[in-house]
Image 1: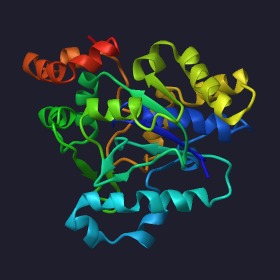
Image 2 (image 1 turned 180 degrees about the horizontal axis):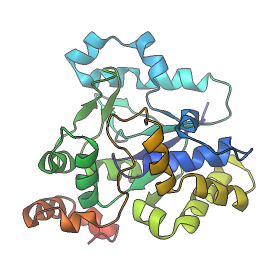
Image 3 (image 1 turned 135 degrees about the horizontal axis):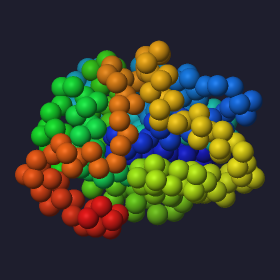
Image 4 (image 1 turned 30 degrees about the vertical axis):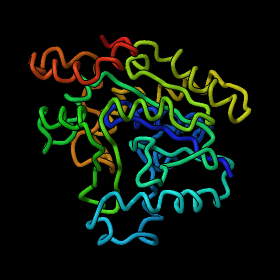
Length: 279
């Protein structure tokens, strides 16, 4: 039954960028110039195609956390499909809601977790969601409680995120039986080939395939940030109403966040930021 490989992260941490790379590596062996449609090869969780059959909008309106009642049912449906494995994009914390787990070792082959400096996330999150001020983004990043993100466009599309550090710690330590790799966004930029080779080697051990460095290089070229910005200038990215591939830079927080905003993030996330060499 195990077949799901989770590509998980807090929002604005390089998840879609990594999806684009993996979509090209695994599903573009013919090396055809790809556009955003290749991302359809890696769905998000929960896949929208299953939701209307399982859950009503009224139930979500009653409580967004009701989505947790369907996590297991959805994964049972996914594991019925023909593929030997399936990648799923995900921003949920690896969380339990009223005893209902997001996932467990029955369904999961592996976890790929992407993590990014929360100070840069505050800037990127606010740029991405024009209804979200930097202060509001920081409120989410430093939330003491779980919170749900409900997509207005697709009201059945619900994610249970929690704070940045809760999200990170949940995937770092949860469901110990499942192999995982933690990838820093900053390494994707500073050490692109080595970091993406590391991801593919990790997956090759899980899926038992030979690493193809030519395909890695091709997939890196296809997922170059500037190339994706160019595609977005001509093709609307269906997962966003705003510019998605906006900057991608490291350290932009230094010129944007106030000392008070920086202090709030660093105080709340201190231990994890030190662990990841962000402090």
